Length: 166
Image (cartoon, rainbow, N blue to C red; front, side, top):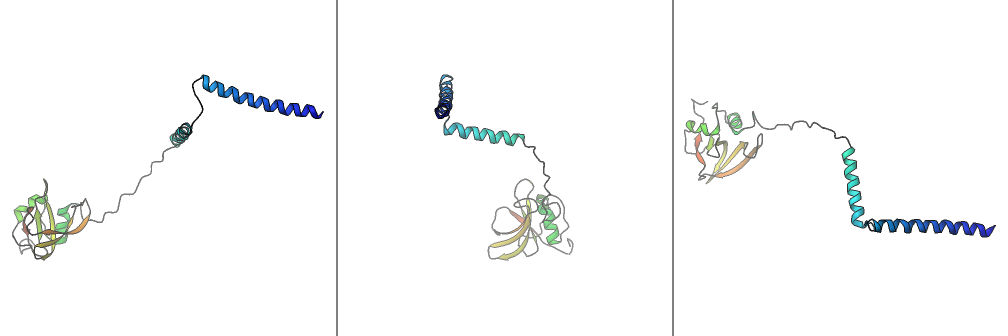
C-alpha cells in the first residue's frame, strides 16, 4: 500500500512538470517567449489604465476664488478707488486728464503699456524712484506695490487731484 502512495505522488509531480513543459513549448512555438520584467511592467500599467477607465469620473465644481481686488479687477477700478478720482474709460484714455509731470503721493500715474494702457496710484516718491500700488499688473484682482523709475519711458504723466476732479 505504501508503494502505491509513492507512485501516486510521483505521478502527480510528473504531471505538473509535463504541464509546465507543455506551456513553455506552446509559448515558444507561438513566438511569445518567456515573460520579461518589461512585459510585467506593461501588464501592470495596462491594468491600471483599465481600472482608471472603469472608474466613474466625478465632476467637482470648485468654488470661485475669493476676489481680493476692487471692482472689475482692472487697474482703472483700483486707481479710482484708491485715489478718489472719478474718471472712467480705459487706462490709455486717462492721458487726456494728465495735469502734472511731477509725481506726488496720491496722484495717478498714466503708463503706456499695451493697447489699453495702465494706471497706478503713487504711494511715495524718493529720489529717482516712484513707489506705486496697482491692480491687474500681474493679473485681474491682484493688488501689488512696486517701484518704477521716474525716467521710465512708459510714463505719460500724472493725474493729480484738484478741486475740479475731486
